[in-house]
Length: 171
Figure 1 (cartoon, helix red, strand yellow):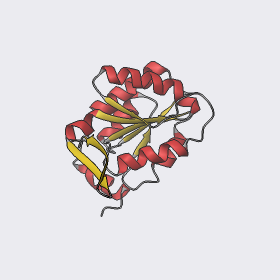
Figure 2 (figure 1 turned 45 degrees about the vertical axis):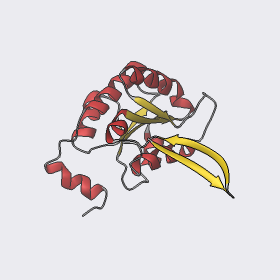
Figure 3 (figure 1 turned 180 degrees about the vertical axis):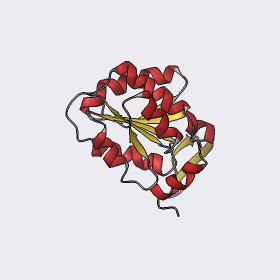
Figure 4 (figure 1 turned 60 degrees about the vertical axis):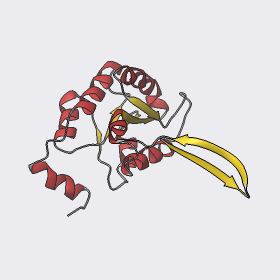
């Protein structure tokens, strides 16, 4: 914990405590965002992953009212891209729009997943760091199963490392 004190013109302004995130905190903190089409699924997923011990940083939306998903996905993708958060879950009707926004960031590998095998391979072979869920095409319970697979499957590495580096233009 860091305690920060702000003084202006020799006057005490305010103080606050800032918790510096450790790697363990980052591993257990998951970013989540959706548009209006994914809102119900987002709330269901958020409730259930907190029961598994994950902390959730919710980037919105906070109702089923119409919203433009880029306004919510850009901040989430930026946080994952910069390393503030390790992984993210994004939802919209098809999963495609939110994935397209997230994949604008160089370090993001967002994968649209609609079944268990695709989700597992997205992590094993592509080291996906954001899961994009098509809320209009799967059930809530399947969406949560995909989230669990995504969060508990590691990157296989090996022959896939070069491919992932090429995705990010790191070679």
